[in-house]
Amino acid sequence: MTYWTFLLPIIAGIVAQLIKIIIELARGTFSWHVVKKYGGMPSAHAAFIFGLLTEVAITDGLASTTFAIALIVTILIIRDATGYRRDMDKHARAINTLSALLPTAQQTRLDHFDDTIGHTPWQAAAGALVGILTIIIGHFLLF
Image (cartoon, rainbow, N blue to C red):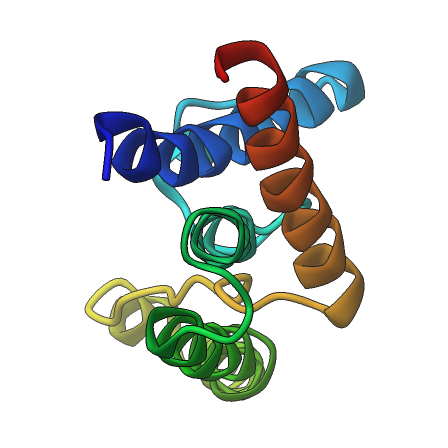
């Protein structure tokens, strides 16, 4: 294993985050909050984990135990990002809506919850594509 096996999936996640920033800049809605926030297009989680899965497929092969483990972890992470965390978005919106009905004095004592921590299937798919392409391009340029 070279250090690129470790670094390329991380670079894939960073590339996805940079794309997210570029999209926000193009919309005119950029703030530094977007750099560290969850959710958005494309999914940096999906880019990272699909980058890792692709790297393992290239270096160890599709029939390896390492690939099987990476595939299982990928399924769990994508399921979490598009399922569980999307449900958390719905709960956050409901709580925020209910807290807005309270008197102003009581509202200030409550936290406002971020309701964009999950990913749509399209955001996850775009992140997966970024991850796969980053690894393939990385291998083309480095090896």
